[in-house]
Length: 149
Image (cartoon, rainbow, N blue to C red; front, side):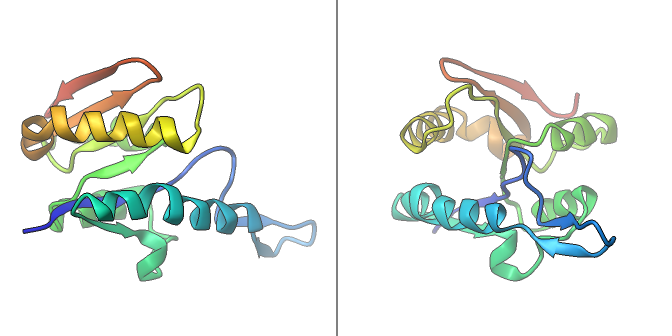
């Protein structure tokens, strides 16, 4: 049986679309490059560890609202991996206990550190992530907040 994660990458000032000077939305190449780098450096190593990793872009769902993403992750019993604080705030307000969120708050976002921290969190927080938690991950520590808050 595969382990599951819903991988969502939101942050670093990049968005799927950027508003151009004429008011039309244009595709951000930075997001595309980030996605390709994340596929190779984060998603594939997770898959090699036996995780069923899905990125919203893989399913053409990159424009879902945060609420829709939370509902999808809950319905599919997946964990959200993100740098976006909104997911933690929405979960706290909702009073729900799922889905779990792993929130990266890293000063150094190199892939080796991300994978190292993620491996530790997934190993050490398995029970909390299954029952519902927000795990904040920094360069040196992680903090678990059990849901509901």
